[in-house]
Length: 250
Image 1: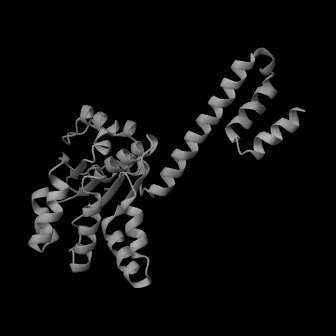
Image 2: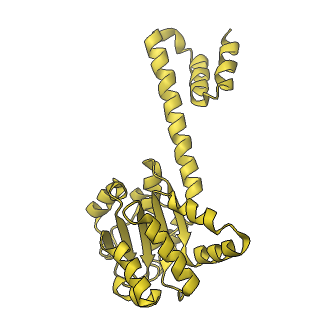
Image 3: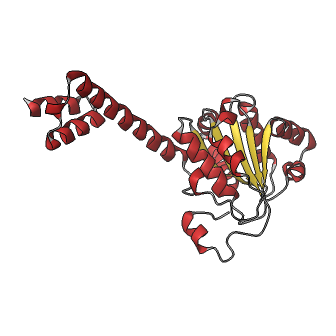
C-alpha cells in the first residue's frame, strides 16, 4: 500500500512530497506524526522543492557569465562600495519601482561581479533576469536581423523584470546597434529595470552612443530614475587570485 501511494505521488509529479515521504518512511517518522502534522510536512516539502526548482530555472535562463552572490561581495577594499546600500539593493525594491542601477569604474574592480550578484538575488526573490554582454548582444541582434529571430529576441528581453547590460561603451555603437539599444530601453522605460556596467563615467555615455537626438532619448530613460555605484581604486585582479576563482573578472 505504501509503495502504491508513493508511486501515485510521483506520477502526480509531487517530487518534493515524494522525497519527504520516502525519507520519513526510512526514518520511521510517520508513526509519530498526527494527520495534520503529516499533511503540513508533506505540503511544506513540496512547496520548498518547487521554490528551489523555480530559482534554478530562473538562474539558468538568466545566463550569468559569473557565479556570485550578495553575501560574497568584498567590502574591505577601498572602492567606494557601501554595504548598507548593497543590502538595500538586495531587497530588490528598485525592481518593483522599475528603477535602474548604473555601475561604473575601472577595469577589474568588480563591476560585473556586483551586477551578477544583484541579478542572482533577484532570481532568488522570484524575478526574471537576463544577463548580456553588450558586444555579444549587439552581434546576436544583428544576426537576428539576418535570420529572422530579431523580434523574438527583443520580445524575450522585454519580458524580463531585470536586464543586465555588461561592459557598456567598450566598442563604438553604429546605427543598427543604436536603434536596437533605443528599442530595448524604450520597451523597459517605467516598466522594468536595467543594470548597466561600464568603465566609462555616465557623463561620457552620450558621446559613446552618438547621434545626439537618440542619445538624449536613451539617457533620459536610463539616468533619471537610476541609482549609481561609482567604484574606485585599483583593479582587484592585481595579486588577488582568489577573486578570479570567485569569478570577479571585470
